[in-house]
Amino acid sequence: MRGDIFKPENMAQNPTEPGMTLQNPYCVKYYVVNGEVLAKQGSMVAYRGNIQIETKSQGVGNFLKRAITGEGIALMSVRGHGEVWFADYSTSVFILEMDPGDALAINGRNVLVFDPTLQYQISMVKSVGGLVGGGLFNCVFTGHGRIAITADGPPVVIPVSPNLPVFVDTNAIIGWSANLQPSIFRSQGMKSILKGGSGEMFQMHFQGQGFVIVQPSEGPIMPVAAGGGGGGGLLGSLGG
Image 1 (cartoon, rainbow, N blue to C red):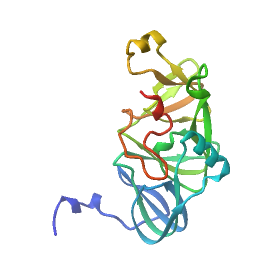
Image 2 (image 1 turned 90 degrees about the horizontal axis):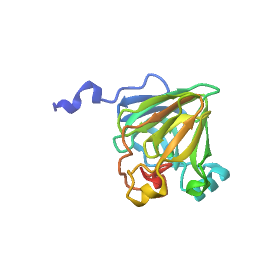
Image 3 (image 1 turned 60 degrees about the vertical axis):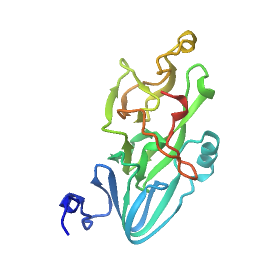
Image 4 (image 1 turned 60 degrees about the horizontal axis):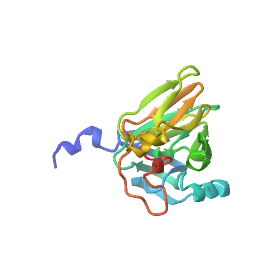
């Protein structure tokens, strides 16, 4: 049989080393060698080998935070020996290498798969002036290892400095240096809101030294998976 679908770049290749690699711009392959990898529930698209998949407990603290806020990550554990492919609604995928001492805050909806050597906690983002109930929650990763994140299109990495803070649409933010001081900023007064406003009522306000990762859209419309992990993500309820 012949056809463009059989081009070399579309063919699964035998793995050369354990861990994650990009299969293509929209899919990650993870070679599990008698070990474990953690991924967003429902993101496995294929596997071959002796693989077992089960729901991953988030621990009591993270479970309670997620139950209250509706945020976090609905995780699954993939164990065994074999190759597993992960993707999320054809969104672009990027692999980040984290070193000891690094700390990255990520919108839960943008987490695809990560090494079990990384630690994960839900952290609160304080709001300005008591807006949106006094705070929102995000996922903070630390440790040494790789994490694959998704974006609705090619992302933009924007440096943040003490003299140049950055404002980001609440639905466009993917992640940021965890040492930054984030808050929720309301850019419009009540008079503007009552007149219809601009549609850009809230932004994330970042101060300090570091970077933010922004996708070039306010996020694709995705169906909500059973058991949590909906497409709204960290800040979806705020609106653009």
